[in-house]
Length: 607
Image (cartoon, rainbow, N blue to C red; front, side, top):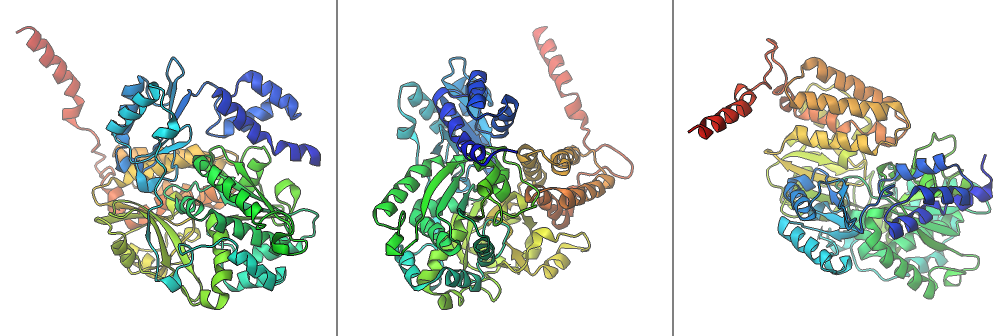
C-alpha cells in the first residue's frame, strides 16, 4: 500500500504530464522512464495512466494539434465538409500528423460547444461555427505564422431564456461577496439545514440531496477535508456549466467556499475538463481577485477560523471522470476508473480524506439560495423540485443555447420556446438519457420522475409509458438535442454506442464488451441483416449491462437505445429481414455498379 506522502506527491503527476505534453507535443519513452523514477512507480503503471487519457500522446501530436468534434450534433452541421477541408489543406487524413510535424489532426467527442457547431479545438483554443472556407483561412494563416490565439473565437454564452425576474436563480445580476457576507448570520449547521430544506440535489446526474451529502461529510472527523467542483462537463450536448463558469466564475467560488464553511473544509479544487482549458485563466484571475478582497484565504470576511483556498486541477480527456470516484482517482494521478464504494467520498475521498464532490450548477445554486432567502426560493418550481434548471439546447431548432427554466414546464411548451423545427426524435439528458417522442408532449420537465433507472419493457406502447412516467426526469446535466423527421435514428444510435465504447474505462466486462456487441447489432440492423431475435438480444444484453456495470456510465449507456426501440419501433422493424428471409439489403443495381462502369470504360476506349 502506498504511503500517504507518496499518494500526495502522485497528485501532481497529471500536471507533470501536461507540462511535457505541451512542451514536446508528446510524452516520450525517455520521459516516462524519468517520470516513473521520480514518482517511484513502475513504468508499466505510468503507461497505464498516460494511455488512459485521450489528450496524452506517445508520438508527436503536431505543433498545432487539432481536435475536431465528431459527436452527433456536429454531424448535423458541416462536420463532413469541414473534416474534408482540413484533410485537403493539411494533406493528411484524420488521426494523423503531417510529415513536418506542424499539424496533427484528430477527432474527439463532444467539446461542450454543441450550440455552435461545427467546432474544433486547436491547441485547446476554441473554433466555432466552422465552414470549409473558414478552415482554409485558419490553416493558411497558421502556416504564415499567425498565433492560434489571434485566430480563435471565444464561444458565445447564448443565454436564450430566463424566467421572470423574481424567479430567475442563476442568470441575474451578480455582486461578488453578497452571499458570503450572509455567512456571518449562519452557523455551519444552519447552512446545511438551509440547503437541506431547499431540496437542492446534485445537478450533475446523481440527483443526491446536497444537504445530506454535506451533513455526512461534516459528521466525519478529520484534520483535513476537501470540496471538489466537478467541472468535467463531458455529457455530449451539455454546455451550461461552461456558460456559468464564463459568466459568473465568482458565483462558483462562493458556492465552494460556503460548502467549505459548512463541512469544515479548508481547501477546494476545481476539476476542469481539458476541453475548457480556455476558461482556466478567467477562473484563476477571479481566484486572485477573491483573495485580494478577502473572500478567499485566511479568516475570510473576518470570520475567525474560516480559512479556505481554491486551486484548479486539469483533466485530460476522459468522460468517465465525471463519476466522482473516477474523478478523485484522476486527481490522485491514477487512471480515472470508478471504484467500488466500500467508502463514499464523504468518508474517504481525495487523499483518503472526507470529500464533497458537487458539480458547477449545484454549487452555483447555493449562494443564490442564501441571497434570495429560503422562503422565496421554495416558491419556485414544483412541490418536490424547487428552483430552476439549466438546459443545454442544440440540434434542429432556431435558438440553440442555454435556457433557465422553472421546474414543471411542459415539454410541448418548451419545444415552442426553443422554436424546434419538426421535432421528431428528442434526445433528453445526453447520451445517458432517453429518447422522447410526440407521445411525451404533455409530460413536464421535473426532477420527480427519474426515468433513467426505471426503463422496463412492460409497457405495450409509448403512450402507456408516457402516462406512467408523467414527468421528464433530469438524470444528467440537462442536455436537450432535437432531431427532425429526416434524421437517421439508427445513425444517431450508432454514434451514441460508439461513444460509450470509446469512453468506457474498460475495467468491467459488461460495459466494455456489451456496448461493443450492441454496436455490432446496430450495424446489422442498419444493413437490414437483422431479425426480431436480434432486437430481443439487444434488450437482454442491455439488461445485463445495466444491472452489472460498476458505475453509472455502464448502467446508463443503453438507455437511449432502449427508449428508441420503445418509442420508434417502426424505425427498427423496417430494417428487419422479412419472414421469407429475403435480404432487403441486397440491391442488384449496386451490386453490379462497378462492373457496369468498367464495361462502359472499356467500350468507350475501343470506340
